[in-house]
Length: 154
Image 1 (cartoon, rainbow, N blue to C red):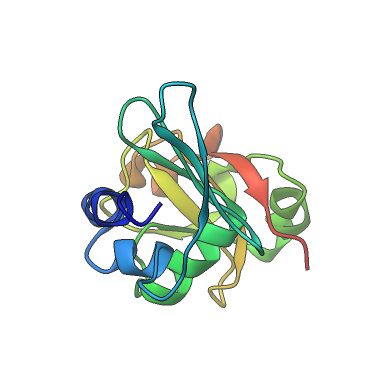
Image 2: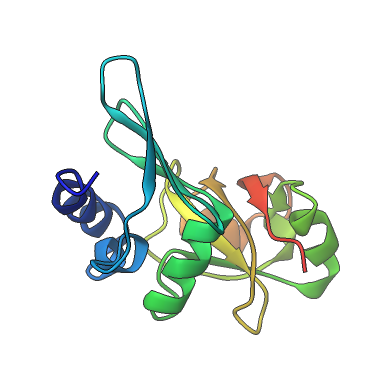
């Protein structure tokens, strides 16, 4: 796996911002990699869980473990969608985050981006894919803001 780490770090920095690669794949850790039949990295795992899956498009999809690492490494509001407390149990249970409950969002979020769904204290609730642009999340009263993939249990 060590031969893949520099490339994976660069891809993470590009997708999530400077420092994301080192946060997800620290130099002092040797994660396990599940590979495709062609040998390409598919999932990157550590004892605590799945960090990321690596798609054929070269983009990562986050696991809850990877989301927590990014949350600690990237200053708010980077890659975040903040939801109110009323939606916390639903989002943790891997139900979608609805636009009407969005309290804040990274202004750079676009549809299709991987995001961290956090509460107002910046505790990670889930990770998922943004379905709306940041401005639409703030303005809309209906619709899915984030398609939640992996909820974080307390």
